Length: 115
Length: 111
Image: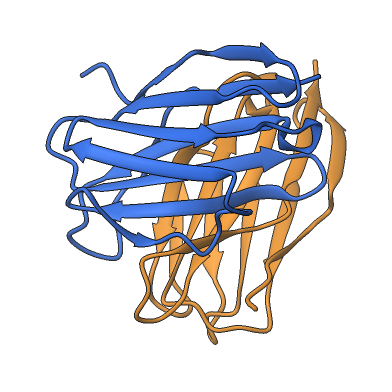
């Protein structure tokens, strides 16, 4: 199994530009999470999908952030317009939700730098 | 708001030494997980504990969930350079799917 796949691995953009991060979860997993990690705030949950439906987006910082999951094998996180404070590593994770000992598998992350 | 405080924040030790990392909260969790994250990679799950007082061993790593399910510890025996990384605890609240991540402990084991 290839694991969770994220692209791009690195993104450098200028303030005001649109940024789209992509994620392919592990086949068969029914839950998908987007996280953001910074030195100051640690690892924060942005949004959670279950069976392709957004269940909780309370962690999304503001309206500039949006996420979609059009099918079970693909999700995007979009930032428009981007700001320097959005610079962070963004992780996608997936799991099959069947019980409290379910394993959440993280992708390698996308390191975003907004200049 | 549920918060998970980890201590220490940073730890640098010599190969062969023992260490303990703590994860504390004032909230009760239905389960707690420990992850290790290496530079440039995502966190990797080490263990999940569910029952108060539960102890799990993974080779030289011993994990314990507090009796009241508010805290946890990770003990490493005879640390090796390969243990170097960021250790994260994550607690799941009752009736939720969310895991709240701790502040992290950055461990460096010197050869």
